Amino acid sequence: MTIKAKDYRVRTHHKLALDEWPTNVKPVCASPAKYKELRDDHVEKLSTLQRLHYASNRYALLLVFQGMDGAGKDGAIRHVMSGVNPQGCEVFAFKQPSAEELEHDFLWRTTRRLPERGRIGIFNRSYL
Image 1 (cartoon, rainbow, N blue to C red):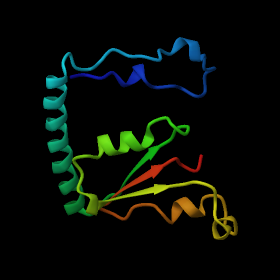
Image 2: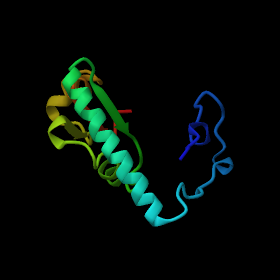
Image 3: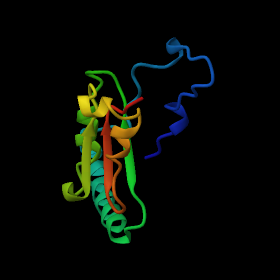
Image 4: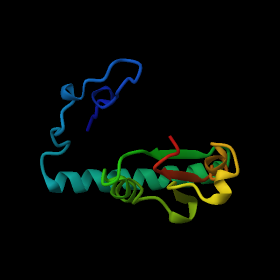
């Protein structure tokens, strides 16, 4: 399976014409059985990589899911992170700032939620 990242990359320094981007893409797999086989393979690899990441305790990993309400961020997180041990992962959703958060600068509430070394942090709807 090969997914070309350039097919999904949007360069923000160029004028964006939404009518040039497809709203539906071809399936990656030809059949549901092939998809499940591929998914199980990737879940196993992801689990192995997470254990190595945790054991090395050198870097932190931050995933940012940005999208409008109803865009499928929660489902994507559930699906993509299905092979990850929940003990090594934290999800934070940023909604309307609390009174305490409003007393600090713009980046304070996200900075304090950054993952520790060896951990995976997920920002569901970033501060951007």
